[in-house]
Image 1 (cartoon, rainbow, N blue to C red):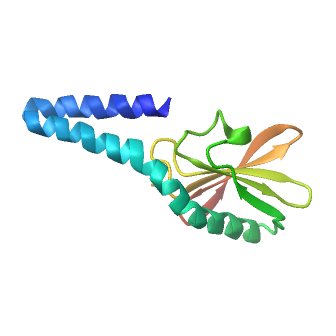
Image 2 (image 1 turned 90 degrees about the vertical axis):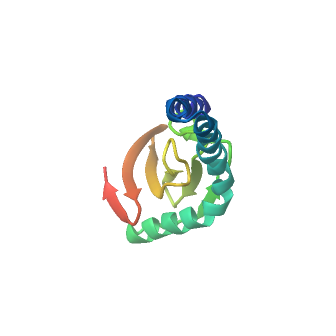
Image 3 (image 1 turned 30 degrees about the vertical axis):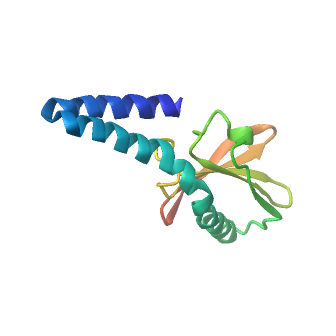
Length: 139
């Protein structure tokens, strides 16, 4: 779904720029496709360590002993229908509880510093916290 939205945004803004300058219109389409369509995928492995550090900091602040922290890569696991293809997903296990963390924003992927943390309770996922940069806010 996200690639189609990126394509629609890029073509629409490119056509709008084309009205003002034909050469600018094509450049806008290519630039937006590169920035929104390709770069978020390239940033996923680069920003992975940053997101791991943020998750561990959140766990430490909330007295959660992390036993395992693993990246789900392109397989999004339980968050498959809740995140876009450009977001990183981490699986966190503690002594009794499992957490799923969506990193980045839906459209911009790893450009954003956003973290959304879900707790697995009885087979369902409950939203428990959201980071937007450095501050953590309980939902």
